[in-house]
Amino acid sequence: MTIRCEIVSQDRTVFTGDVDIVVLPGAAGEMGVLPRHAPVLTTLKYGIIKVRKGDKEELFTVAGGVAEVQPDIITILADAAENVEEIDVSRAESARKRAEDVLAKGVPADTDTYLAMEAALRRSNLRLDAVRRYRKSSMRMHSSEN
Amino acid sequence: MASAREMRLRIKSVKNISQVTRALETVSASKVRKAINAVTATRSYATKAWQVLKHVAEQPGRDSLHPLLANRDSVNNTLVVVVTGDRGLAGAYNSNVIRFTAQRFDQNPTPVKYIAVGRKGRDLLIRRRKQVIADFSNLPAAPTFMDVSAIGRLAVGEFLEGKADEVYLVYTDFINMGRQAATVKKLLPLELGGEGRVEDFEHHASNGPVAAYEYEPDQREILDEIIPRFTALQVYQAILESQASEHAARMIAMRNATDNAKELVGALQLAYNKVRQQAITNDILDIVGGAEALAAK
Image (tube, rainbow over all chains, first blue to last red):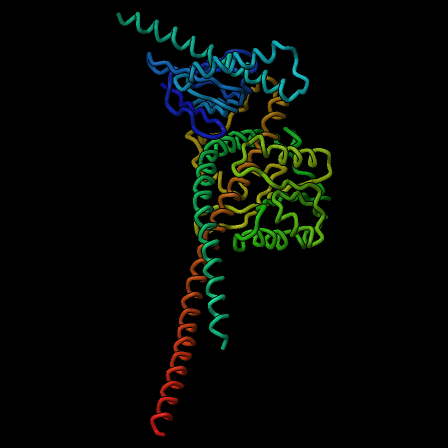
C-alpha cells in the first residue's frame, strides 16, 4: 500500500511518485503521512520534507507552502522546493556568509534589505541543514550495507 | 504614373520597413518560446492549486466557509481586471481584448470599474471613458509571481472591503501559435467548475464523496492564507498566457507585414522597370529619329 506524493513548486514539478511515507513540516509540527491518512489541509513551514519508498529515502527543502492530504494522495504546493541533491553546498555556504556579514553589521537601515537578508539566511541555513541530514542518512545506509 | 526617381525612393523605403518587421518577427519568435515555457512551467502548480481549492469548495456549507467563496445576494459593483500588452504592433491583440471586454461588460447592469494591466489596455479603456482604478504597466518581460501578486491582492482587497461584489479577469488565452482567444474568467467569489481550462485536467483517483478536512492550524487561518494566494495565482497564470499570446500575435503580424512588403516591392519593381524601359525606348526612338532625319538630308 503506497500513497501518491506530488511536490510542485511555482515553476516546476519537483517530485511525483508512489511512496510509503511522507514526513513534512506542518504548521503544528512535523507530521508523518502514511497511506489512508485522514484528509488534512495544512500550511507548511520552512523545513525538510522526507519521502521514503522501501529503503530509498529522498529529502527536499521546502520554503513554506500548503499540503493537501487525501487518503490516496498528498499534494504539496510549495512556495519553493528542491531536491537535496540539487543543492549547491558552496553556494549555499557563501550565501549564508554574505547574509550573516550584512546582519552582523547591525540592522540595515531599509527594511527591504533586512528582510531579504533574513530570508536568504533562513534559506541557506535550511539548505545546509538538509544537506547535512542527507549525508548522515546516506552514510548510515552505506555502513549498514557493509 | 510616378517618376522613376520617386519609385526608386518608394522601393527603398518599403525595403527598409520590411527589414524592421523581419527583425521584430525574429525577436518575437524567441520571446514567444520563452513565454510558452513559462506558461507550461507554472501550469502544473496552477492545476494542483485549483484542485485543492475545488476540494475545499466541495466541503459542506461553502458560503460560510470563507468570505472569498461566498456569493453575495445583491451585486452592486463589478470589478474587471483587463490584461493587455504594453506595446502595439501586435496585430489585433490589444484591440481584441478591449473589444471583447466592451461586448461583455458595456451592457452590465451594475457599474463596472477596471484594473488595467498593460499600457495599451489602459489607454484604450480611458479613451472609452471607463473608470480605471488602477494601472499596472511596464511589467517585466518574464514576471515572477512576486512581480504580479500585488494585482491579485488589490482585487481581493476591493472585494473584501465591499467596493466590488464580483471580480472578473479578462485575458488572452494562448491556444497555439496561430490562435489566441480573449477570455473572461470569474475571479471572485471563486467559481469552481465554471469557465477556464484548468479544471479539465484529470481529477485524481478518489472521486468518491470528499470527507471533511482537518485543518492545521485552524480552518480560518489556512483558508485566509491559501485563497488569496490562489486568486493571485490565477492572475499570474492569466498574465503569462497573455504574454505568450502577445508575442505570438506580434510574430504573426510581423510575418504578414514582411510578406506584404515583399509583395509590394515586387510590384513596385515591376512598375519601375516598365517606366525605366519606356524611358530608354523613348531615348532610342529619339536618337534613331534624329539619325534618320540627318541621313535623309
